[in-house]
Image (cartoon, helix red, strand yellow):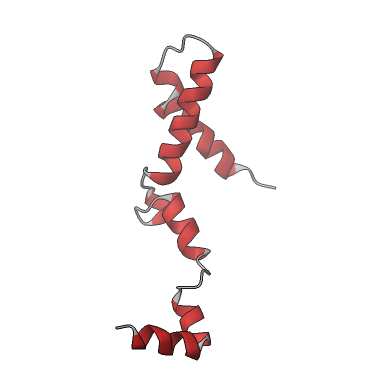
Length: 86
């Protein structure tokens, strides 16, 4: 198995977080990395993802909730209810 994606992630973490800080202790490292990974997933735009965040791409591809277009097309009764409320 090729781990190029994991290696790239850790390179990014090191250069954007680890090497830039002087942590006081392990608790601070843990807190800062927790914060960084939230930033990485939810806020940092990625060139490989067409300048979108990983969270945006992931949730868009896994959106199968009741209000998705696919569900409305498959459920004509719900589509009628939506139309009647407009």
